[in-house]
Image (cartoon, rainbow, N blue to C red):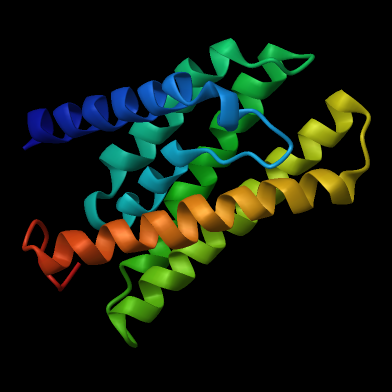
Length: 166
């Protein structure tokens, strides 16, 4: 069982890093369309392996960051991913209420966490207005997490890759 979790964490870590690196042109803009963040909601389904995977994947992916402080981007970006995916998991997999609503709330929580953590430290290191970074990160995160990530979970359930009872 533990080997399966380690393998999943490695897969998610690799996927996240590859998506950030392959799409670096859109992953590090003011409106960060970080497609890799669509993996964050999968923590609702797979738990710790995704939480760990997207955290380590962010460390690897942010190595090519064009921001003024790569160390800050690596550190706080991975912290944001850890908190966002952990909260998405805990909120999204609750058995009370409607499951799809909980999943969407988990995705929304992840978007809020990433928006405020990433937007705040990027505003500090780039000396741009805070609200501009919050808006830019929110737009990209809504697309990646709330739309792509949520759809990914629903499609996986529909085609039978995961059970409806997460």
